[in-house]
Image (cartoon, rainbow, N blue to C red; front, side, top):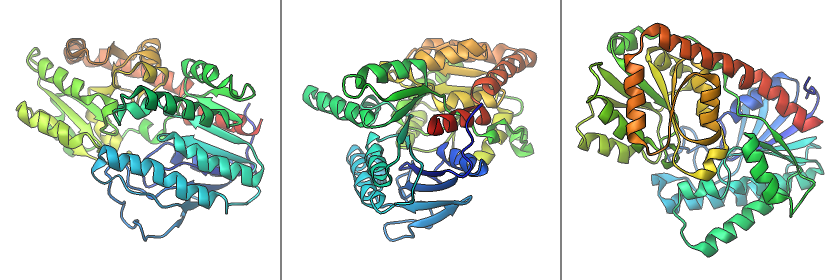
Length: 412
C-alpha cells in the first residue's frame, strides 16, 4: 500500500507543463486529488511547435493555477524552427532562469520531484530548490541522457561525447532517489552512478497512462470517412526519435501488397513533420497518409475508435531500448492491437501482453508484413489482441497503480 501524500508539500520541477501535453500534468492532478499541496516550476509553453502557446510569450504572465497547484514559469528561448541551434539554446536557457527562480521558492517543501524529460539540465534548478528547502530530490528519468540528446542533435566528436556522459552521470548522482522506467534502465543508471554516489536509491515505475485514453468516444463523421478502411494510427510528437520515416516507407510497401484499402493517420506535431510531409508528397501518398496535426488528448479516443491498429515506433538506438515509451501504455489503454517498431523493453511489453506484433527499427519489410497481417485479420481477432493489451495496461500502467508507487517513493 502506498503512503498517502495528504498534507505534504511537493515542488514539481519540469520544463514542460500544461498546456503542453505531458503526463506530468496528470501526476500533478493526482497529487492534488490525494491531498498534497503542490507548486510547479516550469517553462513557457512552446513544445513541440516552437511557437508560444496562446497567451504566453517572452513578456507574458508567469504565474498560473492548475487544478489547485501554483505554477511558476521561468523564461526560456523558444524552439522556433526546431533547428539544432534553437533546440540547444532552448535546452540551456530554461535551466538558468529556473535556477534563479528556484532559489526564491522557499515553502518548506517535503520533497522536490523532478519530472525529467529532455534536457537533463532540468535537474539543476531542482537541485537548487532541494538545497534551498533542505529536502530530498527525487528524479523521474523519462529520457536517458546523453543518449537521447544524440537523437536530436548529431554529436560525433568523441571528446564532447565523453564530456556529456560525465556531466550527465554527475547530474543523476546528485539526486537522493531516481525512478527508472524499466529494470534495464535502473541497472544502467546503477552502474553509471555507483562510483559517484552509491547511496542513490533507484526504483522502477513505468509511465502511467491518463485515463482519458481508456474512454470510448465516437465521431460519426470519422466513422463515415474511414469506417470501411484499415486504419493505422500514430499519435504523438513527430520527432527523429520516433522513426516515422520507417513507418511511412513500410506503409508504402503494405498498400501494394494488400487488397484491403488502407490509411495511415498521423496525429501530432513536431520538428520532423514538414520533412515527412514532403516525403509523403514525393511518394505520391498524400491520399493515403494524412497528417491531422495536434489534437487535445480528449479527442484522441475518437481517432482510436476508427483505428484498426496503433503504430508505436521508436528510432534505432540501443540506449533508448532501456525505456518503455509512454506510447505503449496509451496504445494498450485504447484496446487496439499494437504494431511496435522497436527493440528492448517496449517490445518486450508488447510480447508479454500478446497485444500485437513487433518489428525491429529500420526493418521496413517486417513492419510492412505486420501491417498486411493486421489488415487480413477479422474483427474478432483484432479485438482479442486489443483486449489483451488493455488487461496488461490495467495491471501495469494504470494511473492509480503508478501514482501510488510514485507517492511511496517520494515519502517512504
